[in-house]
Length: 278
Image (cartoon, rainbow, N blue to C red; front, side, top):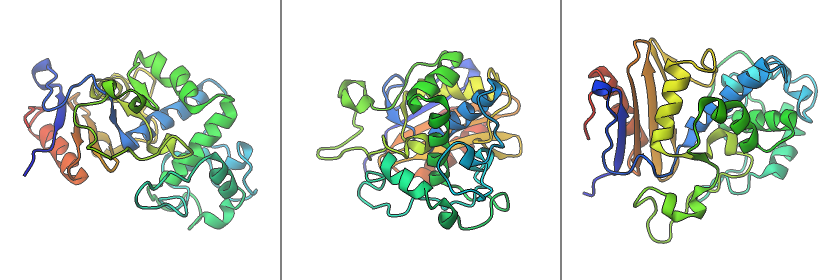
C-alpha cells in the first residue's frame, strides 16, 4: 500500500522536522482558513470597523430579525446548516459563487435550522456568510482584507488563494494525472479555500495561539481543555494544527489519506511531548 506523504512540524527540542513533502511548497489547508477569517473579524472589530455582535443584516442584504450575529457565525452557533444547499460530490463548491450566496442571503431566515445562540453546529456556510460580511464592510476582496488585518501584522507571506496556477509552487505529488483541486475560490473561500506552506501554518499557529501577537485567539479556534486547535480537509489533503497551554505545538499535513488519522497523529505527537516521527 503506498505511503501517504506527510509533513510534520513541531517544537520538539526547538526543531522543526519535515518528512515526506517540503515545508516551503503550497498545499490546501481546508478549514484552517476559518482561523484566519475569524481573526480578521476580531482585528476589524479592534480597529472599530464593526462589532462582532452586529446582526448580520447590518452588513449584508439579509431579512431582518434572524437574530444571527457575526459572532454567531464565527463560533458556529448561527443555526445555519453545515453546507450550502445544492453542493455536489465531484466538485462540491464549484457552483457556490458570489451570486449563489447573495441569492441565499435573501432567504436566510428560511435556511437557518434553529434559533441562533442555542447550539453549536459546525458550518461552512456560516463562514461563507461571515466572509461576505467582512468583505462588504472592508470594501476590498477577501484576500486583501486578510493581508491587511492578519498576514502582514503577523509577518506571514506564504498564504495564497490560487498558487495552483503555478505548479512549481505545489508540494510534490499533490495531484495525480487528471485530478484537479476543488473549486473553492468563490463564496466558500473564507470557510476553507486557502493554500499555504506548512511552514506558514506553523508560523500562524505559534504567533496566534502561543505568542498571541494579535490578542486573544479568535472564536474560530476549537478548544479541548488546554488544547487550542483546528483542522482542515479537502479531497486531496488534510491538516491538523494544535497548541497546548504550556507552549507545545504541532502541525501535521498529509496529502491524501484519512483526515481522522491526521488528527490522531497530531494529538499523539502532543501527548508524546512534541516528539516528531512519521
